[in-house]
Image 1 (cartoon, one colour):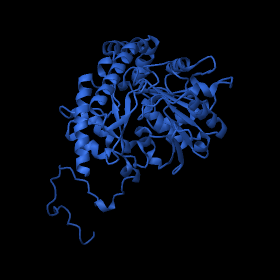
Image 2 (cartoon, rainbow, N blue to C red):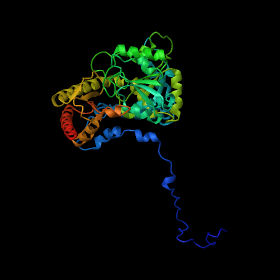
Image 3 (tube, rainbow, N blue to C red):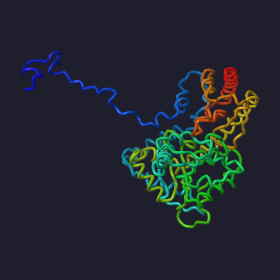
Length: 428
C-alpha cells in the first residue's frame, strides 16, 4: 500500500458520506483549449436587431423581418394537425437527407421553364436559406480561398463562411468598369443577390445578369444566386433568374454553374425554416453529403406543411396582400425619410425587396457610432460595416420597411434624425 494512502476502514480527513456523489475533478482553466479563432471575428449586429423586439418602445429598422400579421396562422395550424395525423412517419420521423421526394419534385416543377428542365435530382431541401449558404461554404471553400462577392454583401453569408477564413474580391456590379470575368477568375465561387440585394435593395439589370452568367460559363466558376426576395417585386415584371439565363441554349437536364437558392421565409413564414437549392446534380449530391454532417435532415413536419401549402396555392393566395402592404410601407418610409433625413442621407427608392440603403452626406458620420446613438434614441439600424468583409465601410446604413406600420416608420425616422445630430455633434 502506498505510504500516503489512508489505512483500511479509516475515513480520510473530510471524506464524503458513503452515499454522497463524488464531485468530478475540475480541470485547471490553463489546460483547456481555446475557442476557434474565427469566433473573435464575428459581428454582434444580427443578435442586436433580433433582440431589439424585447426592448420597450424601441423601433426596429435594423432587421430583415416580415410582418407577422401576414402569416396564414389558422390555415397552417389546420394543415399541421392534418399532416401529423395522415403522415405521421414523414412528419415526425427522420427523413431522406436531400428532402422529401414529393417536395423536391414540386420545387423542381415550380422552378422549371420551357428552357430549364429540372428534376428532383436538381433539388436539395435545406433548413432555411442560411443552411444553404453554410453548405456551399463546406463543399466549395478551401481555407483562405477567394470568394467574388457582390458588394456590399449579405452579412448572413459572411457569417456562414467566416470559419473558412475566405478572402473576398468585391464585385461592384453596377459600375461601368466592372469586369465579371476578371472578378470570377480564380475564385472558388461568386455570390450574388440579384433581386433587391440584401443590403442595398438593388435590382441587378438584365445586361448585368447576362454578363455574370456568361462569365461563370467562361471561367467555370460556380455562381451562387441567392433569391429570397424574388417574389417581392412592387413595380415591373420580374427579370429572368441567373438560373434561367444559364439554361438558355443548353438543352437537357440542367447541369450548369448557377447554384440557385430559394426560401419560404419571405413568401410564407420564416418559422418553417424551409429553403432549397437548385443546381447541377453533382452539386446537389455534394451539398447533401455536407448536410448529413449538419442536421441529418430538415424537419419532416415543416416539409410536409410546405408541400401541402404549395400544392394548395397558399403562397399565391397571400402574395397580393404581402405586396400591397410592403409597397405601402416602402412608400411610407421613403416619404418619412424625405421629410426628416433628406439633409443627412442619400438613397434610392427600391422597386422591391425589404430594404432602403442610405449613405451619409457628411463623411464624418460613422454608422457604427450611429447604431449606438440610435439605440439610445429608441431606434435600431444596421450599419454598413457589417456588410463589408473588411469592416471599413462606415458611411452607409440599411433600413428595413416591412416590419413596422407607417406611423412607426415616421417616428423611427424622427428618432434617427436626432441620433444623426447627436453622432455628428460627438464627432466635432
